[in-house]
Length: 50
Image 1 (cartoon, rainbow, N blue to C red):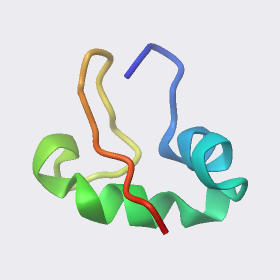
Image 2: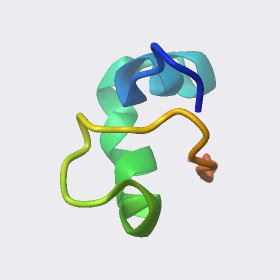
Image 3: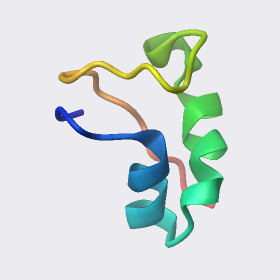
Image 4: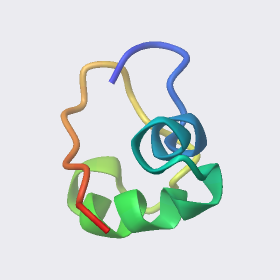
């Protein structure tokens, strides 16, 4: 993760639809924590295929 990244924008790049951010969040809850709006630069997340 880089400063300024949001799950919405990552999902938009990965899937072409930012509204699918929850797919990324569910696959990375253990890394991100309880709030999908709080991601920290340097975190490494997994982008699952749809």
